[in-house]
Image (cartoon, rainbow, N blue to C red; front, side):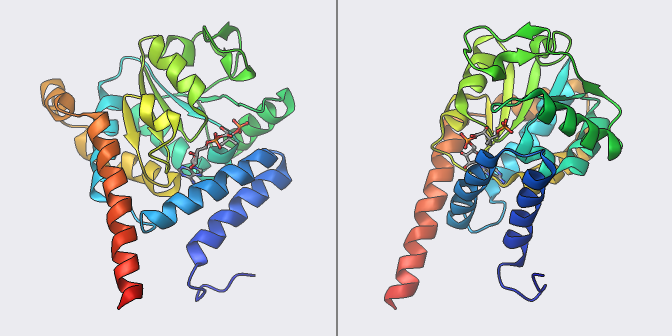
Length: 251
Ligand code: PTJ
């Protein structure tokens, strides 16, 4: 058991959730490695949601509220770390969930769908009757009524290929990825450089706050958003953290 007083309690508990996900057959073994890379970047940003991330989370909420047909993509890591938070967001913005895996097995897809349903998810796209053009791996398999025809897709952490392919289809893609250097972060419409465990609750909080606004007001909010700028601010934030860390050790 990890005691609450442990200085790295939150991080270790998140790790436990991923390990549990693997044991339950929800998360892939590769998901452990992805979590490790995420942890390293989280360390570099100070394990908190920085101003830049909060801004992206607000823009993401506005874009999801403006969407005609939003869909939330779920992979094995997201299903293990934030299933209830994803269900809550899904209900709040009326965006169905869709399981879409890189290391796809039908068994794991079924297990994740059952896991989400057990936790109360009511709106899940479950067909894989369409293919994202230009993708040669299993992540191309999507629901024709879901991700395939969505105008806005929220993509919690993944490899970059599908994000690029979704952008090439003309979709607005919002990605949550702690690594601002990743292909995903670089190619999507809105990058949220934050831990999924903090990002999803924040998007829900902003969606609740913005829900009453008029369409024009939401459009105004997203008008000046510049993803390249977001990424360069995130990289600067990491540089600043490293500099203050080395100063601290010099003194
Ligand atoms: O369940 P599957 O089969 O779809 O596989 C999911 C993974 C995540 C294993 C797969 O998509 C993959 O291999 O992803 P990558 O290429 O390792 O990319 C994952 C990205 O997410 C990396 O840039 C990590 O830094 C980032 N990341 C990892 N954990 C978190 C995270 N970002 C936000 N929050 C995290 N907790």
